[in-house]
Image (cartoon, rainbow, N blue to C red; front, side):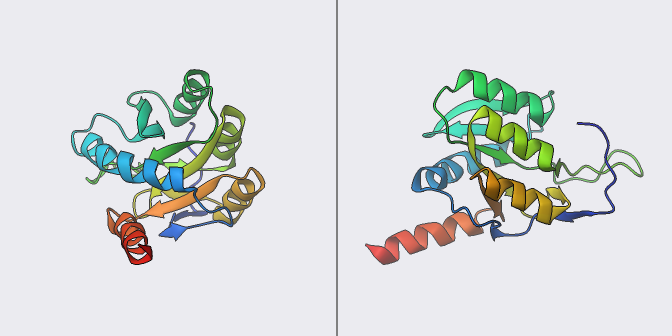
Length: 165
């Protein structure tokens, strides 16, 4: 992805961000993949991952996120997989360079075209370019968008499940 103007970018925020709710399967994929993604980030191996039915389909390492989305669509013929995205927790290497990834409408369009059904992002480490337009595009494409704060969102989901039983 090319550099974009970050003046209209905001942090994703926590919880379900659009009108499309993550399915039970998506919630399970996020719970499964998020801990793995946190380890990949800490080891600086990668900052994104695609999960379907608790199988890791792809890991973003050196390529951009659009390439990961395209590759995932080719590898996973079953639609509805989840893309998990985070960023390094340390400071950027140089001034004026944001270490935070930016989600824009092009990423949502690519997700929809490749068969993605859910986007889970680190609520405090991922930016949205023109957040209302991104969320609107995700809603139109029937893609659930979730902002995850470490394990807090996942723990809330587990607690709700336990309360229902």
